[in-house]
Length: 548
Image (cartoon, rainbow, N blue to C red; front, side, top):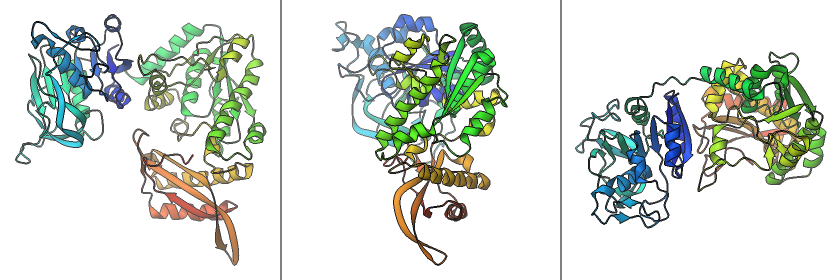
């Protein structure tokens, strides 16, 4: 299987780079910049991508790599900081015989290669492609001769340093008004670099540039498919688990749902699924999960639904601080789950969980990036309980190398209904953090019904598939109203819908006015205790997508 290796130098877009590579149907992994040369050779990647990062290459404490990396014969693409690092290290051979040494690493370097830019570049920038024959740029749609500067396309810049001197054997392939080396390459050594970010949406032709590197420079075949992933994973799970039994905590979310489906296909009724219903789910959600995985469902497994509503509400009532709400739900779930796990002591060997790749990447420490196995929690249980019950301390995580969109594609391959696979993101504490202020069963029912109406109207209008996330929340505000001939003093429901591609930033969606009006009318008339409906137009930043 072809593989692209992404070395992380602290770049905020590392996961976006990986997503773009996988859009080419090529498998890739993100690893820390400290990955040893010998390990890289063992991995045998078809290509390497060096990410951006906030540091300066000439700072002795900045993340770096040995010059040998560029002599492996493996195609390399440096992005932003990665491009500067390539110039800084590859230029070492052009320095005097005494060799300049990096004060922090002792590696040879070219101190003249990278300088602080006289004019920093941030944001959308016009770029001139000087070498349209480059494998990176030959499929890029350009705008030749659109102005006196010969601007060809636009890109997204974010840098304060720039490449002042290219290494021997390289050529400049693109520039901007303030950046003489916006891209460079040494085709003979298959070394390529871009100062801008081709992975972001703000570089319209960026996908083609990355595809040029992955397919044309690296020679990847592009045959990594979700169908083959599912088949291979099911086979691997059977081999690993054998005759043992596995316990999985189902949340109703797509990650645990697809994990359950994969394990069911692999080991059948050796899988035990526990669904803890804390009374803070969306309308009908618990029943939908049970219909899929319960006795009437199409998956072969053992399913238990635990009604823990009273237990959760007993601790949540009276609490108003969102962090305390999160803490309580985070504490109570493993207790309820643990009670069920104890019933299976001596029968279950493994715990499973729906870890996905962003969880893996973000759980690494800043220096080494090594994945930190959760030493306090395995598969939803405290490590002390895991040891007490004799379960294996390493969880089964079949989705740990997939992004969310890939998980959804696997779910469809496995026959999970589309409405469940594309279920809206939902916070772990559930409606507890969509109720501003004190939580009560009465308030939970209000927000549950309002949310259902909003989702139903968006779906009927056909606008839901274009939204990143949408939901109703209950404010802590009472207001005066008039219904019929009577004064009311009711609660206000807040509707929230955003457009986002990565959930790091988001803009409020422009929902058609008639849809909002219909939703408002239904909520006011159908949900007791509500006399006002608000639409939240706050972007992220400064706000967050959730209200708490």
